[in-house]
Amino acid sequence: MSSDAVAASSRKGRLKQRYDNEFRLVAGCVPYRVNKKDDEGGNPCSSLGDDTAAEVEVLMISTPNRADMVFPKGGWEDDEDVYQAACRETTEEAGVKGIINRAALGHWVFKSKSSQNSTTSTSGACKGYIFGMEVTEELESWPEQDTHDRRWVSPAEAYQLCRYDWMREALTALLERLSVLQPVAAAAAAATPELAADQSGMYMMLQASSDGGAVALC
Image (cartoon, rainbow, N blue to C red):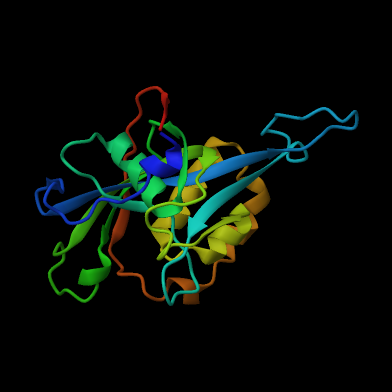
């Protein structure tokens, strides 16, 4: 069966949703690809440490009636581990598969869209686990393409497009891991406050766990 056929539908509802006390658990990815450049002899270069040898792009998705963009994420369910949840949500929302690094870029606590105006500090709060995924396959069709367009962008553009500050932090963590943070540091500082105007004001980075940086294909 083709990958497109496997990704014919997405999960709906929250019957299997995992919770950590009052926090809804979610998982997602910052999908990326490395575009190799040729050296002077026409041979592909593979060094991420050399800014002239390779370029990193990240994949973002849109939502209806918004100019800003997000990274794919969604509910972590009780019949899957966190890596499977992150991969599934990335396939459902962005239509890509790849190699996920099991060392999280970070853990964040934030409010869901539906509870932005809640007066209770933890009401509707989510705890998100975000991972880096090197994309190896782009599907021609995917379950949520009617509501999510996808777009490859440079890290500098991604900093400007990110809807939430915590997503910028996840992007920074990925670029630090790939050793390509310096070329886009200015863009991070220049991210406009208008793009973050709808922040809930409730998000924080938690200690990222690591199991040796193991990777898994998903």
